[in-house]
Structures are given as structure tokens and as C-alpha cells.
Length: 164
Image (cartoon, rainbow, N blue to C red; front, side, top):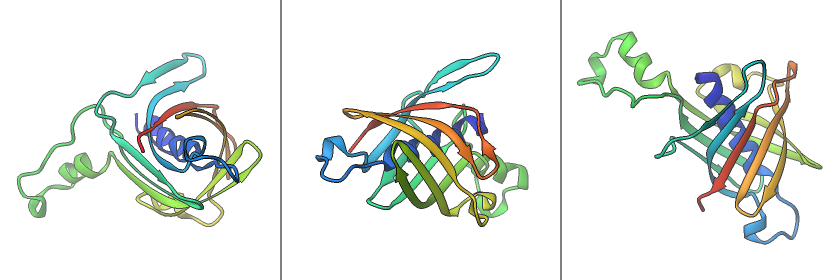
């Protein structure tokens, strides 16, 4: 599930970053987005519809993005005293939380995102990136994973809706 939601968040960012010069606000993907559906291909393809409340939010500006999400099927536990929490308790609370912010570039219908800061330090290593193809229809964005710094990736597709 963690990989799935990490892909969701990256896809929402990719969805949210493309904008064409001179587009109206409704035709721009700058704004605030939430992922609502993820399609995972492969030998056992599946489509996951994100439940309410949607535990993800992506904010896109002219050249930067920021995203946060919770990768958990259940509510995260609330320790009685965070200062006295065990390592397992802390993992249960923070392990499913994802946070990332960075820059992006658009080339045609492709978006390449480069994290600057992330909860996962591997996402910040020099040369790290993800590339997505995208389409925008009204206030619905769809992105499909294309590649990362290691080469082609599974073509997961994410659908997001504008919330602002």
C-alpha cells in the first residue's frame, strides 16, 4: 500500500504541475488537487478509488509543488505520550506519512519532477526525478508514470480532482 500511495502522491504532483501559457485558471493545473482514483496495471490489474476523506493534498505553483499524504488503510494511532512512544509506535504514526516538495519542468505532455525536500531521503539524492505523461479535462487531471532516474516504470495512472 505504501508504494501505491507514494505513486498516487507523485502522480497528483505530476497532474498538478502542467500549465500552458495564457490558460484560464480552470484550464491550468496550478492549484490544489486530491487523488481520487489509481489504476495499477500488470498481471492482476486493479483500480483503487480513494475513500473520503481523501488523505492527500497537492499544492502547485508556477514552478514548485508540495504534497502530503497518509499511506494507510486505517487511521493512524495517536500515542498517549509521543515523548515516551516506542520505535514501533512511532513507525505506526509516522511511517505512513509522506511529505515532499520540489520543482518541475514541462516538455510537451510530459512533466519531470525533482524533489528538493522529502521525508524519504532517497527522493532527495542528486539526480532523482520522476516523469509522468498527463492530460487535463476541465477540473480532472490524469497522469501516467513513465520513468524515473533508474529507467522506465510501471505505467500507473492516477486521476485527481481540483479542490481549489
